[in-house]
Length: 599
Image (cartoon, rainbow, N blue to C red; front, side, top):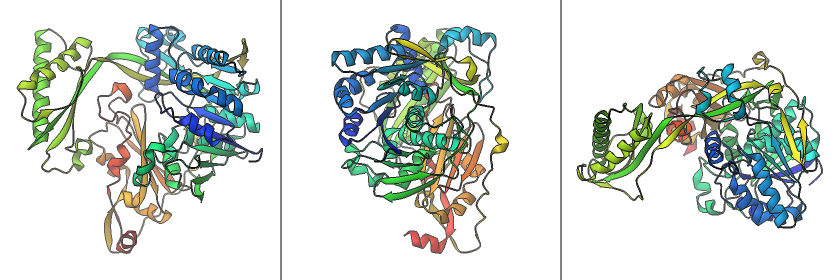
């Protein structure tokens, strides 16, 4: 491998990820960096609660126990740099724990900790001049309800820490791709105005940030990897100095790296693909070219960048009452109807008890009968359903109100329609509803520091500039296909791959054509109205459609579609992870001859 290429392994996509990644990547060898992404908005709220109970907590403890303790000796032997946002809401404590492990093992590794993202101590000041929620326009929560407030930092502080000699870099909240971009900036000396390179490095980080989702996890063509999921390979990005890269995985591991897996991950959790905002650059993925170089080696080129914004995105989480629910199963004739009757009775009985106790009504209830195609809405296929799982949940201002629902749902066990069953332990308990509040703050108002070797170094990064949306050149939409020829409907999955994800209360569904020839037909059939109608049972907002000619893709962004999103939602899929699956059997009219060629 030449000095113009660095190899970066992606070992973690969330807090709780399998511990198999680090030893697998170390065994693969010849890596310059291993990166770890532990954080999501939900995770930050959980960590904030942990810190409130114990000032020494609030970080990803798995990073210490499952990554460093068992692997630090081999990490030191190979000279691999470890970059992670495991710090959560307490990066200083995480850094102290990491240094203790290194001391106990007698190793000589430098740990750098990046701070400045945590703004919870400034809650009162923010409330005095309150920002508006960047998507909904809602007002800023009362300070006493706030659990966490964190700015999303970028890759330049990570690069600065590496320049100070760090072997392990721990950040608090940063964008998921920042650790990868930081490695690239350090290795190649990229400057703040080299936007295309910065965008390419950010895309490499975006591919790595969810671990095996780039190597066959959650893949539309899951049958290709079904037999090897147990030993799936974690992704490796071989990044070149020009910002292009190859995605691969360790030899001898399971899964697959192909155009489909990488394309799906590129579209995962994005909005406007030409204005993907990060602290260091605004990325344009619309002309990205993804090609198969060799088995399990996929080349990614053509990422475009614009100047970095002059603000950081900030995510705050705050308490908003309580939620709770339960899942039960029914089987036998008309199992779905029995489940619906049971949940109707349980909620009615709970409401009677609430009134008797002079408590308010539920602010929201949700019933989803899984097995009766409740996730499909108007597109559901009705038939003889003999096995279902029913999820019943509610929100209430008080924990006691949720406790009543959970008690009454159990208390109906002898008065239920026949067929109630299920395997469970103790009764579920009420849990806090945690909502997300997102806003922006000028970069100049967020001091960032790097702590290493007992000294604290102020970080002065590029300030950025206001984004100019007129700089975007929107691609010409696909030409209208000839639909006067004999046509045949085929399910979308025959023509495309799909991947979906969440951003707060929004969800995206990315559709990537398997061949460029299919794009006009998919575009003609999947209009904004068609997609909006398909998800109407979930959606309370608009649908936006974006064309990406480079990867032959279409990205749909749906507003207000997740019932609040995350742990503010009562939905079975509060993060929209399966939403693409609901679209992949959508009928697409194509010429009969094209349909025959698919057979």
